[in-house]
Image (cartoon, rainbow over all chains, first blue to last red; front, side):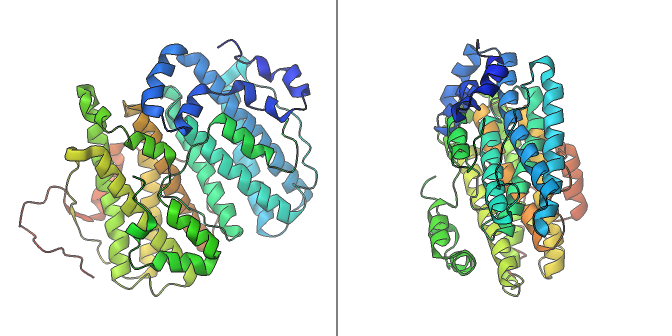
Length: 207
Length: 232
């Protein structure tokens, strides 16, 4: 599509609106998946957007999530959160950095630039850190599940390899928080709009 | 589909009680309504004719038949372990884990059977070689199974012709990964070992399953073993 990559440049980064994050790179198919219309909606989508540009949009979409999470966990690990949360922050920072690296490599020149974040005390106060981490991981799981069927086949395996790791992260932080680590027999997908809405609930601005 | 609720899967209420004790009534009520979940999956389910309407989808049927056997393997393992009393002897948090896995895998069996319709195969006969009888052997086996299912579903996604089924595979593989990570955390080890989970091709999964000798026969002949071998 024409917006391909264009929302990831300096203009978008300068925008303070939460909507700029993920918003205009919204992957139409994701909405179809989450709305429950995948089986009929996908073939239409496949006809309306070349696979390569769809891949670029989807990979940049999850790259933005990974930038956010990598920065968040790095800051938390550096500031020192309590007990097991410190270990979690370190391990997750490493994983999300690896995801960022993988996605940037696949995207090459089309990779979105990393935004800068201001997490306030969400990355340093342990209680807030844990709650934020849970939201981030559950949102990432739903975002990945929502796009797994939309990427081209050559990307499905690495996409799934990251998806299941996000699910492990979510289960880990949920169990620390004494929340149910696997509340559903089948995980829900979220559309990019729903992902954006979930991130808007966080205490800090997501650029 | 939507009628497949926790009540149906948890007839004696054991999971709901355990969840209520650990997570509070609200959470249990939430689970009661939502345990099956997966809008993506239900969307895939809503169109099972896709599978049979297209002859080129024959391979999808084969893949989901294989996945069904795997879900049979898991669900039977958890059900037997519960019947053996091994789960009842676990401490509360561990028991909720074990019961949740059983409920989820039984739900996966139902879901995949619905997707396959007439193409759904029968449940094979299993012999879990004593692994249902001790908590330690059960946990080790369960984690291995959950990791293996994650690896299997990850590996087969590109081979699925139906994008609806790919979506279904994604919403199942995250649940299997959660199960394994949850178990590792209960055991006090880091729940996730790397940034990318390793996919496994079907042939390798086959080899691993064969090495366990859990599956007595994949195509049981009628009446050969008329009574299950695993009645606790």
